[in-house]
Length: 518
Image 1 (tube, rainbow, N blue to C red):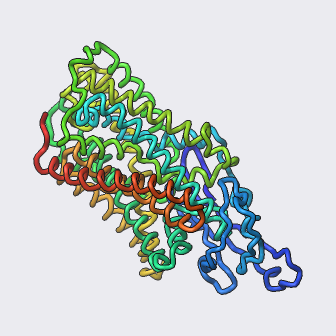
Image 2 (cartoon, helix red, strand yellow):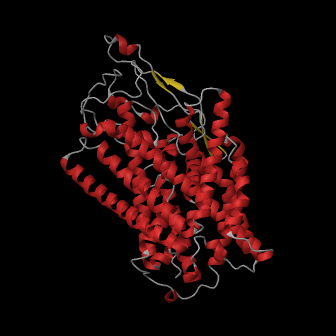
Image 3 (spheres, rainbow, N blue to C red):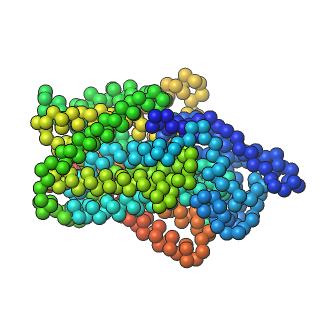
């Protein structure tokens, strides 16, 4: 189970859930115990994975005939089917995953809200003025609001599919990769053989996304330090600061337990809040007339806006872990639930920073972070740059725990002795940190890297995979009219996702090779 300790996620020990048949004649079902095992790893965005074992030792019960009753979010049956699960000996419609979660340290609604805000507000919010520069202020306001609504809806899709698949597999909770795997395994017969591939796709894009975030974090720290030190002392290139940061970053990420990083994370959160507050103070000073900025920039630059904006809405990987660990998970969804409330706040912050940042500095917003546009002669402005740089430096390790949490378990089996495993894990950590350093040094264009990461990897996770999973999960569990509406809606989201993926990635690569200067 996920536990929360001062803002960090970890996984607790396994527990057993016994499910017995309601039919006295089914002796074997009466003796069956479903064991839910948890991987005892600290994975902030991958927790909540439930692995079920039947008597034959399989990972999940095999897909049965397509006669499952559809359940709503609260776990109740939508139809009146009383089909029995032959593997478990109980009615599928009677199983409510929300009531079968055994949590040692569940989070309150407020705690979940804080984690949701923290997971979505990072370097992306500081790049929103740059995004508005690429779109224009009218297009930026409309599209950011629209994109926030779509991303929030995709988060709801993921939660809904997770609940439905938890009922079918009689699992208390599922992770993002396992939701994709189970959707295909219980989906159309021709797609069932791709269930493992679907899970690997999600894990691959999670690794790519998080390593991309790490590259952005490296560049963000280096560029802000360059501005501060150059103003007061001497000039060094961005690559020089990346080299200086490499060793401290490696040492920080050799810490294997998030428990020891909790104080650093808490301090980083305080610095972020203070830094954003001071940044807003500068943005609202001496605002020019709105006619001084463009309402629409150009079609050529619009894909760069899309990539940056999608990058900013980076929290879909946290949705299931947060919902899985809530004391009252029913409060997560709904019109006024935690998810909608948190994402409304996030969307308002993004549009506010983007609009006022672009209005205040106009076409001078070019560098991927509004902190770089604050007046260099002010000590307060320089302190914001230093504080945000230090905050992102400390936050790097949290983003890094996701890829190492996926890559290392996949390679661990190749090393047999305890000492070889310890040395191998350390080597992989050093390699991955060095890889992000190398990519950041090769492309010292913060704005272009943010847009590329958002277009290529974040777009797939946030906009493409969730609607695909929904279509496969409910392919034969909706009436004709319901399925047509869902199909049209999901196809539109998928098309938007692929357009952003293709055009955004292409435009970002072109911007990396030939940077846009105005």
